Image (cartoon, rainbow, N blue to C red):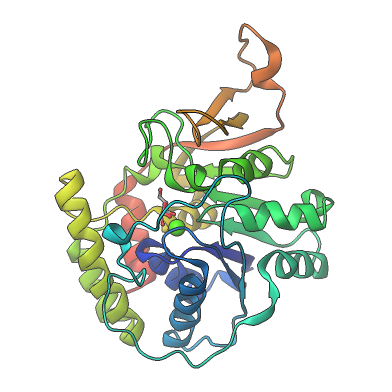
Length: 314
Ligand code: RIB
Ligand code: CA
């Protein structure tokens, strides 16, 4: 039976790869895309979401626009050197025909979850302000979603935008603190596993061959994104961060997880850091273990994950 999901995203090259999976995978029922600033401003994120759905022949999928900035801190400039100014590697893009849903992302989430209580999984792969706003509109969502899967954070791996913080958590730590401690069933898919996965040019050639007009955009934007990985990180390929959230949902056996308690640092030089207290472990104070229990991914079979991505899109 397909998984009904809402995919919350800031596309973004690796977001685009994951959106393609969400649009194409037979075991996913994509109820909608909700957009946020992050890799790009929110209008560009919405444009890209509409475009990707259109290229996949899925303009029927609603796209609802959400957060334009963080809850509390000022917005950081978009990382154009990683995703391009247009979020898709600055390649030339076809014109978008569709229009966005008139509702806000938060309202779309609330309406969609309430229409199918207990069924919908929220997969979020950008700064998590839309989920925080949805919780504000309807606090009872915590009991009505099936699960929340968050691509973000880092337990042992260290950060990618600061020594300790992952980008999606750093971009809105106050929203992240609310979402990660809300008390809904939640799985964190962070850098501990996404950094084990390298999507190579060979994988992308297969994806390009399999995905028509959508494949062309994925392959051309991949070139820009993987240039960043080569230049800054010495990696031959790219980490498909956001696709890992979907890989966990559909192929959890490829991941090792642990239960425990999360907190997000909201201020100071460690802002955006995710702090994990394993279940049952005693610390000097109880406060580390007082947030609700969640599940975090600690390890993954990276080769199998990227093979799953390539196979899904071939
Ligand atoms: O740290 C990786 C995350 O930051 C991914 O979601 C990527 O798209 C960027 O937003
Ligand atoms: Ca993203």
